[in-house]
Length: 224
Image 1 (tube, rainbow, N blue to C red):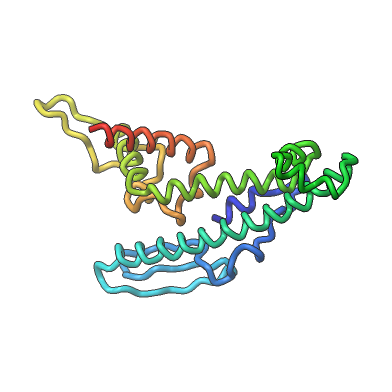
Image 2: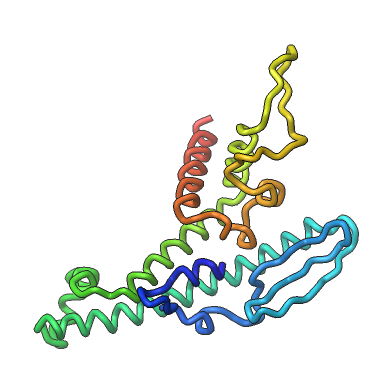
């Protein structure tokens, strides 16, 4: 998730989002599960790492727990960003109205009449613009995670379509022993499903494409 915050930079390379204001230093930045030695290594937002051992066969349970923790933290982060963005746009809007000679007294009428985003677009607000983009990206990520089961089905379908198929036999046999080099998703994502620990592997454009495919997949399921 840090990738999306780091992408939220102005023209001078400065982050327009204060990471400390929207995250908790003890939150899970990412994790790596060692299934052979039965432990997970967790990296927190403050850069510290810790190992947690689990019983043999408990890797799925630990992953589900970590995924739920990350989702709860993600929801809190999005809420904090939305509050920060609302305050900034409101403040900047009042300044825009003053600059345009409308006066502070006219501001409430303008806002109620739909002038909120109208006045917002009249003066360039690079910081707020980047935050709006980040908000859209995070909402897109949230949708993918909320529809994870169907998104995972699409990921499996897309990857399996790249696998080699032996057509020399009476019944075609798909080769699952080798992961295709041109697969659109990583093997880790294919095996463990898409989650907040690996979703940053995909660009916003790739996530939009995955959402579109997932929605189409869901529509076909409903119409069966």
